[in-house]
Amino acid sequence: MTTTLISGANKGLGYETARRLIAAGHTVYLGSRDAAKGQRAAEELGARTVQLDITDDSSVAAAVKIIEAGGGLDVLVNNAGIATELLDSGEVIGAEAVTADVLRETFETNTFGAVRMMHAFLPLLQRSATPVVVNVSSALGSLSRMTDPASHQYGYAGIAYPASKAALNMVTVQFAKAFPRIRINAVEPGYTQTDINHRSGGQSVEQGAEVIVRMAQIGADGPTGTYVDLAGPLPW
Image 1: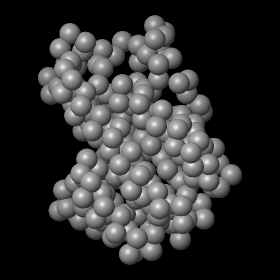
Image 2: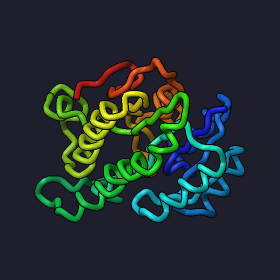
Image 3: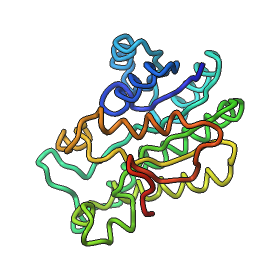
């Protein structure tokens, strides 16, 4: 039995990924900052739940103990993310208004949180026969796409979110090189209708979760250190 932990999984892409992996036979721990919301989602899905704030060392350490006591971990999906620069009005905080505080808050979840999770769960993953990490990134983290006037991403004016995902891509590469037995990859789910973008995305969570689910199920001979969407490799 494959045991999987998904952060930020009480709704959106995390919830749909959990649903699909449970259907595929995984035992899924649904990580949620709000314990009550996590419990409700877990009951709906038939998942286990764990209170998890990936920005807090003590919360992550407590989750490690719970999952270790439950038998260990095979797959870690770093799904939790924020986009502080996307305002409720639909406007984006761009270069003229961005502050260090906006970047700091965004990086705390999207980059530092993923590093905190990988570092904390590394001992459990190393005990697995087929350890896998999926880092949910974005095409906005592609320097190639962001500098290509022909790409959809080029016109996005925000700084904090793309920078945090570009940094996550580098983290993915370096961890993959450091731990070659663990399959560690970054994925781009696409512009999906979720709370993070005020449901302005052009595709459903079912479509967005597809690449996450696919990469969560790769075997020991699967790729590592890659950056992909459903169509294949993305340019860094």
